[in-house]
Amino acid sequence: MRGGVGLCILLFSAAIAGGQAPAPANQAKPTGDNKYVGSQVCQDCHSEITDTFYKNPHNKSIVSQKEPPERTGCEGCHGPGGQHYAAGDGSSIIAFPKIPKEQVLDTCLGCHSQTLSRANIRRSSHTVNGIVCTNCHSVHSSPAPKNLLARTQTNLCYSCHTNVRAQFSLPFKHRVNEGFMNCTDCHNPHGAPQPTWANATRPRMVEHSKANEESCMNCHADKRGPFVFEHSPVRVDGCLSCHVPHGSTNSRMLTRPVVFTMCLECHNNAGNLGRQADGVKTQARAPHNMANPLFQNCTQCHVRIHGSNADLRYFR
Ligand code: HEC
Ligand code: HEC
Ligand code: HEC
Ligand code: HEC
Ligand code: HEC
Ligand code: HEC
Ligand code: HEC
Ligand code: HEC
Ligand code: HEC
Ligand code: HEC
Image 1 (tube, rainbow, N blue to C red):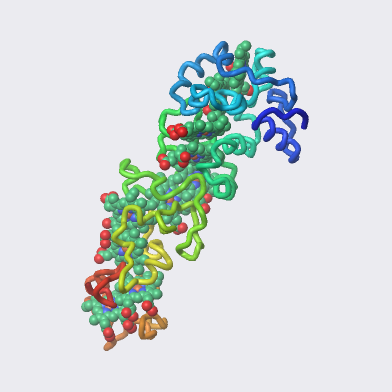
Image 2 (image 1 turned 135 degrees about the horizontal axis):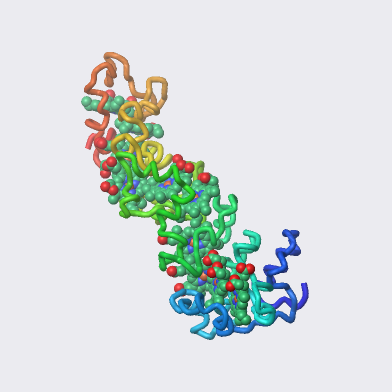
């Protein structure tokens, strides 16, 4: 590496040193004589991009004139334009579709690692599966100006997660397809920290709400408690032990069509569950005779199923 000027060049050189594929001919070369020329120069030949760039949040660095050249305007992302300008063709400039994904990530994170946690984004399933910034963001031709998304959010996510669209079309669902809420109300596509609920078994890039709780609490705060009498799966295993988050054919988005079959997954004869550690007695003559339809509608009696401040069996 010689005479590394600026961030992008440094990163690029590091990528080469790290054994990446050899650079295609048209990329900025890590030489000392490739100078920064400033964004005004680009206007001569790329007016279709520069004419609308004033709307782009990345225009701020040009306007402020406070950033060093390697962090200003076009060259903040595309690297120094000196050789490219001199050549007058498509060569010697960083072209994002042609560089390794790792380098795309590094370039964008060069400025964005303060708001986006570098650690989370690197081990997120998106990064691990080769989905990087430019798969979701379009710097120059975003139809949704906010967040520079390549498409409107729901369509963006569905373009790869086609099966999820069907889940949000089931009879009982969160109204995402209706535009009432977004995937990012629950997910962080940039990677979420390890969760503290559900024994950290199913991260799925589910966003945290305050105090490291499930994102569900952002809207369903009444289920948060604390309750004098907690129903422990609500707090320990999380909402997903009884609910399907996207949509379901079962009312209340429950995991099973009939409520009692779900309860009996945990509260069965065999178990040693309950404060008496004797499980729920479900045979004839026991308090819960399952042959009696009355007892099949568990939440008819145990109404405060998410926890109660008044009754240890959640009757009220
Ligand atoms: C003298 C004219 C000229 C100037 C000035 C110029 N470019 Fe280019 N640029 C071209 C030509 C010609 C191409 C190839 C055709 C095309 O993609 O439009 C190109 C292509 C590009 C590409 C795409 C490369 C690829 O492989 O797809 C990028 C990115 C680019 N220019 C960035 C810049 C930036 C940033 C500046 C300002 C620092 C700049 N250009 C200044 C002429 C110019
Ligand atoms: C925030 C980073 C960033 C900045 C700043 C930026 N670009 Fe780009 N540019 C990209 C990316 C990423 C692409 C690849 C296409 C895409 O994903 O939208 C691209 C593509 C291009 C292309 C290839 C043609 C095309 O439309 O795809 C040209 C030319 C170009 N940029 C010129 C410029 C000029 C001129 C400026 C300054 C006015 C500029 N860029 C500022 C990231 C940036
Ligand atoms: C899987 C798709 C996806 C990928 C990959 C992705 N983003 Fe995003 N990004 C989004 C969505 C969706 C939003 C809008 C979030 C919202 O509406 O709350 C967003 C918002 C942002 C924002 C503005 C809000 C914020 O959180 O600060 C920035 C900056 C950003 N992304 C940068 C990046 C960078 C840099 C990368 C790569 C390191 C990247 N994104 C990768 C989908 C993605
Ligand atoms: C030279 C520094 C720099 C680089 C490199 C950079 N950004 Fe940015 N980006 C910024 C700044 C500054 C803002 C404006 C933040 C603000 O509004 O305060 C911004 C804003 C954004 C936003 C938010 C738009 C919004 O509506 O809030 C997105 C998305 C984004 N950048 C994506 C990218 C992507 C993708 C890349 C890589 C191709 C990239 N950035 C590279 C500095 C940079
Ligand atoms: C109400 C909150 C919520 C919303 C809104 C939401 N998700 Fe999810 N999603 C979750 C939770 C919680 C999980 C974890 C499920 C599990 O581990 O069983 C998950 C799991 C996933 C998975 C991985 C599991 C699988 O089925 O492959 C994908 C992919 C996914 N969501 C995509 C999306 C997309 C795309 C959107 C928007 C169209 C979206 N989600 C909206 C809460 C939500
Ligand atoms: C360019 C394709 C692409 C786009 C766009 C995309 N994803 Fe993904 N996503 C993937 C791939 C690939 C995986 C990893 C394989 C899998 O689990 O399906 C993944 C995984 C996930 C997972 C599962 C995480 C896990 O740990 O299992 C969630 C949740 C998710 N994406 C949400 C979203 C959301 C929300 C959006 C929109 C903001 C989005 N994705 C946009 C390709 C994409
Ligand atoms: C952005 C706010 C928001 C978030 C986050 C959210 N929900 Fe909801 N949820 C709603 C709204 C609003 C309704 C009312 C149903 C509707 O959309 O008509 C609802 C309804 C429900 C219902 C009842 C459905 C029915 O058929 O009556 C359940 C169960 C539920 N949510 C569970 C969850 C779970 C579990 C999570 C976390 C994975 C979650 N919610 C995250 C807003 C949210
Ligand atoms: C032990 C199983 C279980 C767990 C865990 C659970 N729920 Fe429920 N939830 C139910 C049952 C059963 C119903 C239906 C009650 C009825 O119809 O009488 C329900 C109904 C709901 C409803 C719709 C009716 C209402 O009370 O508002 C929402 C919203 C809801 N749950 C959200 C959540 C959230 C958020 C979590 C996680 C904090 C959660 N649930 C955890 C069993 C559970
Ligand atoms: C994921 C497992 C699980 C599911 C599903 C579940 N529970 Fe529980 N339930 C528990 C655990 C664990 C306790 C706490 C026992 C303790 O405190 O020792 C508990 C406690 C209770 C108690 C209080 C027990 C006592 O000894 O006072 C009642 C009543 C109860 N559950 C009813 C229900 C009903 C009704 C359903 C179905 C809507 C249900 N549970 C679904 C695991 C579950
Ligand atoms: C008709 C009202 C009613 C219905 C319906 C009902 N229960 Fe109960 N449940 C009770 C009463 C009353 C008690 C207290 C019994 C006792 O103390 O011996 C109780 C106690 C419990 C306990 C605590 C048992 C223990 O050993 O401490 C659990 C767990 C429980 N019920 C779960 C369920 C489940 C699961 C269903 C559905 C299959 C259900 N209940 C349906 C009235 C009902």
